[in-house]
Image (cartoon, rainbow, N blue to C red):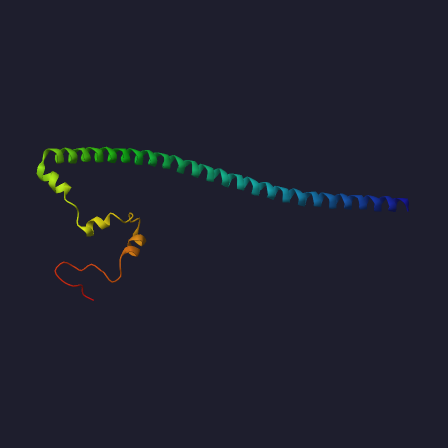
Length: 140
């Protein structure tokens, strides 16, 4: 009888040990899956950081090019303004032309803010005042 009790206790201990091992195994598998997800998230964030860094470098280069272009355009504008000013000082015909006031329709164009896109342009166009082709009326 004592042998049977020892055998049952041993079997019970082996069973409990098996259940503990099985629970630990499930916990280990779950932890491994969580670790894998965390590593993937870190990898994704590293990739995003790398992409954003590359985009920032490209933007910096583009900004430098745009700045150089802007400076070139500003220099050309300044040069042309000086040329026009010199021509006005040197030539009476140009000076009188430059002093002539613009027609009201043309001068009124300067009163509006700059058009910033197709939608802005479309909103400013009157529906009833469409442009006619040269030499006749528009065909419907």
